[in-house]
Length: 267
Ligand code: DGL
Image (tube, protein in one colour):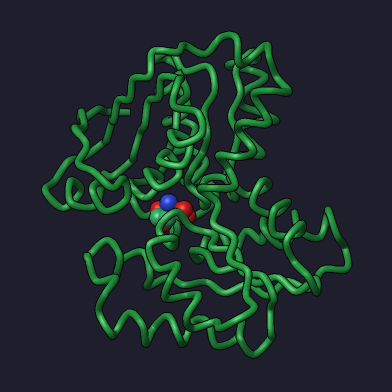
């Protein structure tokens, strides 16, 4: 199976893109809804929670896990790849969404001026900035934490005019810096993509990690037949969550486009 992990149900946006391009595989989705948000937590806690999730998914039989959560990708992925996997699961792989998104943003940026909006934790980790500068030291990067957006979307307030006002405020420094490309660096933000595009105006290129991660996964599996050959091809999808409330069901429909049946698990 391919495991897809997120702090909650926002990662279903990413899973949806995987299903478009790679529908043949079996997928196991895990949302840590009991402990969302990760975006406000320390590095140590995000790492611990993410390791628990990865361990759980591997024990269920996943051969490859994608961290759809940007905060987990930014704060935990490197340690998981370099320290945790070699000791616990040397033959298995965990991938994230930051590097594919960075590569895409650099490929699409015309003037080398890239904005990043993300959770507080992702911005504080400077992961996007560091990865962008690793690939292109000359690129100008403007980051903006948007701590209110996840709670607003989770409360179903994405169409409220107050959300527009807050979004305009968050985007003002990026507009002022005249970034030509903007990374939507959080699972939830693609829900606000049209609003962001309207506020930023003509000429802005938006990079959403879901689509990018899906295209990069296709490419990754072509380059790694030793992983691809281990993936089962039954076309099944299972959804696991660490907590289930009616709101999560509503959010799952918002992110996935259709209702999902989730099983509650303990990590
Ligand atoms: N999934 C998180 C991310 O993509 C957003 C929600 C949270 O803060 O946990 O950064």
